[in-house]
Length: 134
Image (cartoon, rainbow, N blue to C red; front, side, top):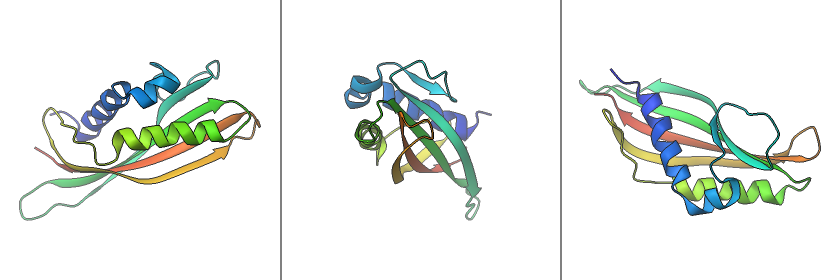
């Protein structure tokens, strides 16, 4: 059986690489996990978790996924711009999963801050997906 979390990540990845606002900033630099900081801008998949919400014979879960947005610019505004582009690409997006059913995908939070190196703006986009397991 396919993992609902893996299917969700694949659908989110496909939505991001298909979004002109995101790719205008990062191109195809969207990765599963943190990358070497050799790029000017990039997106990575961060931590994820899920909670079970089973109801009357329906296997239901809420997956939370963090999307990290990175821009090496010494300013915070480019990281905010990238985080907003990711939010626009994903909030209430009508994505489909191969096996499981995605009921709704919501962006629940967007943050931006400077990393400790003083030159990397870091945006964090948190999404929640309600998924029926099949």
